[in-house]
Length: 445
Ligand code: HEM
Image 1 (tube, rainbow, N blue to C red):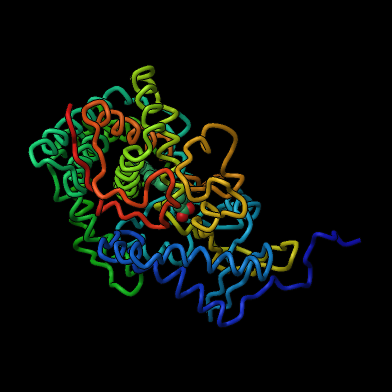
Image 2 (cartoon, rainbow, N blue to C red):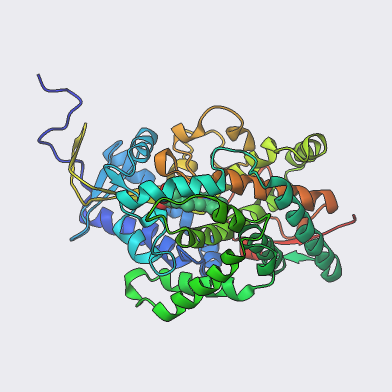
């Protein structure tokens, strides 16, 4: 007898043409417009003003209400997509990556190959088998504290001190001031002291990331890419003790790993972490109870890990995920209970739909770090770092660096956000919060 859950012979539910256009215009277009690989601050500000991200979530919710738990096929000509609509299906797709749901989707390959053609994220299965363990080995993926935590903490303290002095001088900490110091920290952590002031290396990757926003519409600038990799390699060759470059030198790499080729993803991702950290600083500035708890934890636990502050960063990422769309692609036909998912179909997990689902989450629109203190929120579709075998291997080092930076700043000054309307505890938090517009008064030391 056939398995009653099997959808053998049936097709998955399909969106109409109008519904598909609705998803393209209100979900996909704003994501592309804001810049997937390098954010465009004016467009992010516009999205915030026009509440585009809120509309995107409402569009997906309406489809779920109409069609049920899906997946819902969007019949885009030549490249159909399946929109994931239930948390259980989020887990299923991510658990079954990279087979039969490849992380290296067509879109990601064409975009990311502008600046990281050999990154694990866009590698085929054979190359992934060498590259994934290598990333995990250098980043100490399972460990809350990286083996170089003590050294990284000293670097963070140093840059937080400079940031604070500049903020005192100008009477304000704004995004350019924060980002400058953050990048000095990031280059020291990844590439060593000799890269501290090498803005050029981060400018080069930024140019390539700007191209990557256009994916296949922009021809690849091979000379620029070569210049970037040469400069990156010079830094890595020094293998300075106390940096990830030294660990790269010391970590045996299986043939086909391409250690150098893994590093651009780390630099790129540290930019997302900067935005998440700055937003967290703003939320702690408007949520005094949470801030007191964070301060008590800093006093009690440093220099150990800071679980509450890490939960604060995670919940900022729930509210405003820096990877709002997680893409997969079916490598073969797969039977689902409601029908057949065809080989080649792109799979869209639109994280904000799950992260802000007020029908399931009482905390949907408020700041709720406690969400991350127990259980596995990933099972409810809360996946800022993705999940399963291709989950972000930089999750722990990210939470470590971000919580270290927040602790270093909060110990020095109150850093009260200016114009913090809309992000108070009683507010329904906005669907977009541009990090680029945030400003803080340092206050007394
Ligand atoms: C705010 C900080 C970060 C967030 C929210 C984040 C999130 C993510 C997500 C969602 C993915 C999966 C993407 C996909 O499947 O399409 C991913 C992959 C990845 N991330 Fe992160 N990431 C962050 C920071 C970092 C950092 C700092 C590093 C390294 C130092 C890093 C290294 C990687 C790598 C190597 C992958 C590819 C994993 C694979 O394909 O197996 N990430 N990240």
